[in-house]
Length: 203
Image 1 (spheres, rainbow, N blue to C red):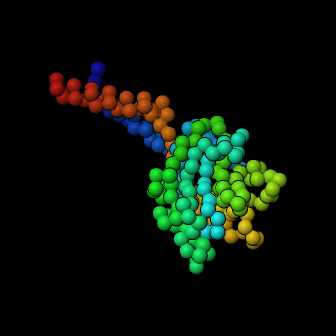
Image 2: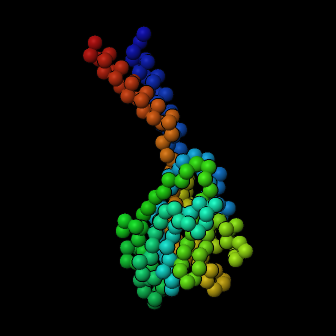
Image 3: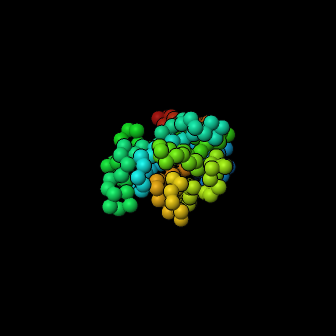
């Protein structure tokens, strides 16, 4: 048995497995129709800016229980930085993630439908899934714009005066992949290939 060739084959197999696992997960839905992934999927979020008089908090909820947050993404610790620029809020002056940073992440479970909830206190609540706003609101209150592979800009409208400006709360979302069992197998193959190579050299 040629150990060198075996190591090469195992390395190629492992490399292929890792390459496939690094690809973004296919989303059944990541838009105003809902957030639903086929497999467990990590999404990185970054706060951009907010505009508005009200203190708001951005939550993640499950669609089946839209009023119960399962995770807090960003919170306005004060309503805005200054009123002179359309009540703009920035991070970290007025808006932060719970740990005080301007970024956050969440692992969405495969097969579970989620939504983003913007809770603006006395100004009410809006959800990123159109159907969850019914019958209070029939218009899309969130804009999802794909700017790159797996990356989205999400702009929120908090039911202010029309025409809507979609600048009340803006974030980006980068869809990533959670390592699957196949990835762990690939890592094992890489380790095995390295061990075989070292043993061959020692002999």
